[in-house]
Length: 212
Ligand code: SF4
Image (cartoon, rainbow, N blue to C red; front, side, top):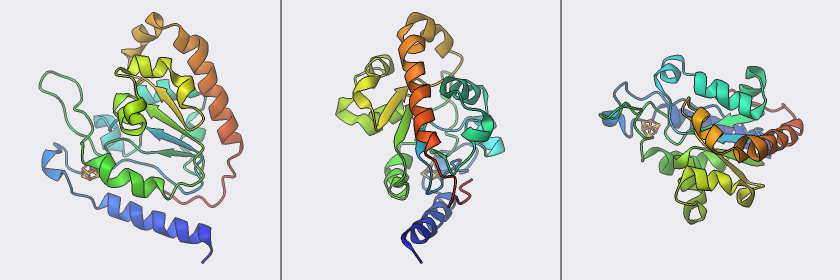
Protein backbone atom coordinates (compact mmCIF):
# COMPACT_ATOMS: atom_id res chain seq x y z
CA UNK A 1 0.00 0.00 0.00
CA UNK A 2 1.42 3.44 -0.93
CA UNK A 3 1.39 6.48 1.37
CA UNK A 4 -1.92 7.81 0.02
CA UNK A 5 -3.60 4.41 0.29
CA UNK A 6 -2.28 3.99 3.82
CA UNK A 7 -3.53 7.45 4.80
CA UNK A 8 -6.98 6.84 3.34
CA UNK A 9 -7.18 3.52 5.15
CA UNK A 10 -6.30 5.25 8.43
CA UNK A 11 -8.85 7.99 7.77
CA UNK A 12 -11.56 5.39 7.17
CA UNK A 13 -10.60 3.66 10.38
CA UNK A 14 -10.67 6.95 12.26
CA UNK A 15 -14.12 7.78 10.87
CA UNK A 16 -15.41 4.39 12.00
CA UNK A 17 -14.24 5.25 15.51
CA UNK A 18 -15.86 8.71 15.35
CA UNK A 19 -19.18 7.22 14.25
CA UNK A 20 -19.06 4.80 17.17
CA UNK A 21 -18.27 7.56 19.68
CA UNK A 22 -20.48 7.66 22.78
CA UNK A 23 -18.19 9.85 24.86
CA UNK A 24 -20.76 12.48 25.84
CA UNK A 25 -23.88 10.45 25.10
CA UNK A 26 -25.50 11.34 28.44
CA UNK A 27 -25.47 15.05 27.58
CA UNK A 28 -26.95 14.72 24.09
CA UNK A 29 -30.77 15.06 24.02
CA UNK A 30 -31.11 13.29 20.66
CA UNK A 31 -28.24 10.87 21.21
CA UNK A 32 -24.94 10.62 19.31
CA UNK A 33 -25.02 11.23 15.58
CA UNK A 34 -21.70 12.69 14.43
CA UNK A 35 -22.13 14.82 11.30
CA UNK A 36 -18.92 15.48 9.38
CA UNK A 37 -17.57 15.02 5.88
CA UNK A 38 -13.90 14.32 5.23
CA UNK A 39 -11.58 12.86 2.65
CA UNK A 40 -7.82 12.85 2.50
CA UNK A 41 -7.68 14.99 -0.68
CA UNK A 42 -9.65 17.99 0.64
CA UNK A 43 -7.82 21.31 0.35
CA UNK A 44 -10.35 23.45 2.16
CA UNK A 45 -11.55 22.67 5.70
CA UNK A 46 -14.62 24.26 7.27
CA UNK A 47 -14.82 24.18 11.06
CA UNK A 48 -18.18 25.35 12.37
CA UNK A 49 -19.96 24.93 15.69
CA UNK A 50 -22.31 21.94 16.00
CA UNK A 51 -25.26 20.48 14.09
CA UNK A 52 -28.73 21.96 14.58
CA UNK A 53 -31.82 19.76 14.56
CA UNK A 54 -32.24 19.82 10.77
CA UNK A 55 -28.62 18.81 10.24
CA UNK A 56 -29.01 16.10 12.90
CA UNK A 57 -32.12 14.75 11.12
CA UNK A 58 -30.60 14.71 7.65
CA UNK A 59 -27.02 13.85 8.60
CA UNK A 60 -25.86 16.48 6.06
CA UNK A 61 -23.66 19.29 7.42
CA UNK A 62 -24.74 22.90 6.85
CA UNK A 63 -28.00 21.66 5.33
CA UNK A 64 -29.96 24.67 6.57
CA UNK A 65 -30.30 28.42 6.04
CA UNK A 66 -26.98 29.08 7.75
CA UNK A 67 -25.42 26.74 5.20
CA UNK A 68 -27.12 28.62 2.35
CA UNK A 69 -25.65 31.87 3.67
CA UNK A 70 -22.19 30.34 4.09
CA UNK A 71 -22.26 29.00 0.51
CA UNK A 72 -23.29 32.42 -0.74
CA UNK A 73 -20.44 34.06 1.21
CA UNK A 74 -18.00 31.54 -0.30
CA UNK A 75 -19.61 31.85 -3.77
CA UNK A 76 -19.85 28.07 -4.21
CA UNK A 77 -22.89 25.96 -5.09
CA UNK A 78 -24.04 22.83 -3.26
CA UNK A 79 -22.27 20.53 -5.74
CA UNK A 80 -18.89 22.05 -4.90
CA UNK A 81 -19.65 22.52 -1.21
CA UNK A 82 -20.61 18.86 -0.80
CA UNK A 83 -17.74 17.44 -2.84
CA UNK A 84 -15.72 15.83 -0.02
CA UNK A 85 -12.71 15.36 -2.28
CA UNK A 86 -12.39 19.16 -2.25
CA UNK A 87 -14.02 20.45 0.93
CA UNK A 88 -13.80 18.81 4.36
CA UNK A 89 -16.42 19.77 6.95
CA UNK A 90 -15.82 19.18 10.63
CA UNK A 91 -17.65 21.07 13.41
CA UNK A 92 -16.31 21.76 16.90
CA UNK A 93 -18.94 19.37 18.24
CA UNK A 94 -19.97 16.55 15.90
CA UNK A 95 -23.37 15.81 17.50
CA UNK A 96 -26.43 17.98 18.17
CA UNK A 97 -25.85 19.44 21.67
CA UNK A 98 -29.45 20.48 22.50
CA UNK A 99 -30.92 23.85 23.51
CA UNK A 100 -30.07 26.31 26.24
CA UNK A 101 -32.75 27.04 28.86
CA UNK A 102 -32.70 30.71 27.84
CA UNK A 103 -33.13 29.78 24.14
CA UNK A 104 -30.77 29.09 21.27
CA UNK A 105 -28.63 26.05 20.58
CA UNK A 106 -26.24 24.88 23.28
CA UNK A 107 -22.51 25.27 22.56
CA UNK A 108 -20.60 22.36 20.99
CA UNK A 109 -19.79 19.63 23.50
CA UNK A 110 -16.38 20.52 25.01
CA UNK A 111 -15.13 16.91 24.84
CA UNK A 112 -15.44 16.64 21.08
CA UNK A 113 -12.78 18.80 19.44
CA UNK A 114 -10.02 17.92 21.95
CA UNK A 115 -10.77 14.23 21.36
CA UNK A 116 -11.11 14.11 17.61
CA UNK A 117 -9.72 17.14 15.79
CA UNK A 118 -5.99 16.44 16.07
CA UNK A 119 -6.14 12.82 14.85
CA UNK A 120 -8.48 13.74 11.99
CA UNK A 121 -6.51 16.79 10.92
CA UNK A 122 -3.34 14.71 10.86
CA UNK A 123 -4.98 12.73 8.05
CA UNK A 124 -5.85 15.85 6.01
CA UNK A 125 -2.40 16.82 4.71
CA UNK A 126 -3.69 18.63 1.60
CA UNK A 127 -5.65 21.28 3.50
CA UNK A 128 -4.38 24.73 2.55
CA UNK A 129 -7.04 26.92 4.13
CA UNK A 130 -9.28 26.42 7.17
CA UNK A 131 -12.38 28.54 7.65
CA UNK A 132 -12.99 29.13 11.37
CA UNK A 133 -16.72 29.77 11.54
CA UNK A 134 -17.80 31.22 14.87
CA UNK A 135 -16.13 31.94 18.18
CA UNK A 136 -15.71 28.34 19.34
CA UNK A 137 -13.56 27.39 16.35
CA UNK A 138 -11.64 30.66 16.54
CA UNK A 139 -10.76 30.30 20.22
CA UNK A 140 -9.77 26.65 19.82
CA UNK A 141 -7.51 27.17 16.82
CA UNK A 142 -6.17 30.69 17.27
CA UNK A 143 -5.84 30.35 21.06
CA UNK A 144 -4.08 33.39 22.53
CA UNK A 145 -3.93 35.05 19.09
CA UNK A 146 -7.73 35.33 19.00
CA UNK A 147 -9.06 38.71 20.15
CA UNK A 148 -11.82 38.49 22.74
CA UNK A 149 -14.77 38.81 20.34
CA UNK A 150 -15.76 37.30 17.02
CA UNK A 151 -16.08 40.78 15.54
CA UNK A 152 -12.53 41.74 16.57
CA UNK A 153 -11.18 38.41 15.32
CA UNK A 154 -12.91 38.76 11.95
CA UNK A 155 -11.75 42.38 11.66
CA UNK A 156 -8.16 41.10 11.93
CA UNK A 157 -8.70 38.36 9.31
CA UNK A 158 -5.54 39.29 7.40
CA UNK A 159 -3.39 38.32 10.40
CA UNK A 160 -4.41 34.65 10.20
CA UNK A 161 -3.88 33.96 6.50
CA UNK A 162 -2.78 31.88 4.71
CA UNK A 163 -3.71 29.05 7.10
CA UNK A 164 -6.94 30.39 8.64
CA UNK A 165 -9.78 32.72 7.77
CA UNK A 166 -12.21 33.58 10.59
CA UNK A 167 -15.91 34.16 9.87
CA UNK A 168 -18.95 34.85 12.05
CA UNK A 169 -21.55 32.13 12.33
CA UNK A 170 -23.79 32.74 9.28
CA UNK A 171 -27.13 32.76 11.10
CA UNK A 172 -29.97 35.19 10.30
CA UNK A 173 -28.65 37.45 13.08
CA UNK A 174 -25.55 38.10 10.99
CA UNK A 175 -27.53 40.22 8.51
CA UNK A 176 -27.77 43.11 10.99
CA UNK A 177 -24.16 42.50 12.08
CA UNK A 178 -23.06 42.82 8.43
CA UNK A 179 -24.81 46.18 8.14
CA UNK A 180 -23.00 47.44 11.24
CA UNK A 181 -19.62 46.24 9.95
CA UNK A 182 -19.40 47.21 6.26
CA UNK A 183 -15.76 46.03 6.01
CA UNK A 184 -17.11 42.46 6.09
CA UNK A 185 -18.88 42.80 2.72
CA UNK A 186 -16.33 45.21 1.28
CA UNK A 187 -13.10 43.41 2.23
CA UNK A 188 -13.50 40.06 3.95
CA UNK A 189 -16.05 38.46 1.60
CA UNK A 190 -14.13 39.27 -1.61
CA UNK A 191 -10.97 37.90 0.07
CA UNK A 192 -12.83 34.78 1.17
CA UNK A 193 -14.11 34.14 -2.35
CA UNK A 194 -10.69 34.75 -3.84
CA UNK A 195 -8.92 32.38 -1.45
CA UNK A 196 -11.59 29.68 -1.79
CA UNK A 197 -11.31 29.86 -5.59
CA UNK A 198 -7.52 29.59 -5.54
CA UNK A 199 -7.49 26.68 -3.08
CA UNK A 200 -10.24 24.73 -4.86
CA UNK A 201 -8.90 25.22 -8.34
CA UNK A 202 -5.88 23.16 -7.32
CA UNK A 203 -8.07 20.29 -6.08
CA UNK A 204 -7.44 17.14 -8.06
CA UNK A 205 -10.72 15.53 -7.07
CA UNK A 206 -8.97 12.17 -7.19
CA UNK A 207 -8.34 9.67 -4.45
CA UNK A 208 -11.50 10.76 -2.63
CA UNK A 209 -13.13 8.44 -0.15
CA UNK A 210 -16.65 8.87 1.18
CA UNK A 211 -16.60 10.60 4.53
CA UNK A 212 -20.27 11.17 5.09
S1 SF4 B 1 -20.29 15.13 20.38
FE1 SF4 B 1 -18.27 14.31 19.84
S2 SF4 B 1 -17.48 13.45 21.78
FE2 SF4 B 1 -19.72 13.65 22.02
S3 SF4 B 1 -20.57 11.66 21.35
FE3 SF4 B 1 -20.60 13.04 19.56
S4 SF4 B 1 -18.67 12.53 18.50
FE4 SF4 B 1 -18.47 11.76 20.63
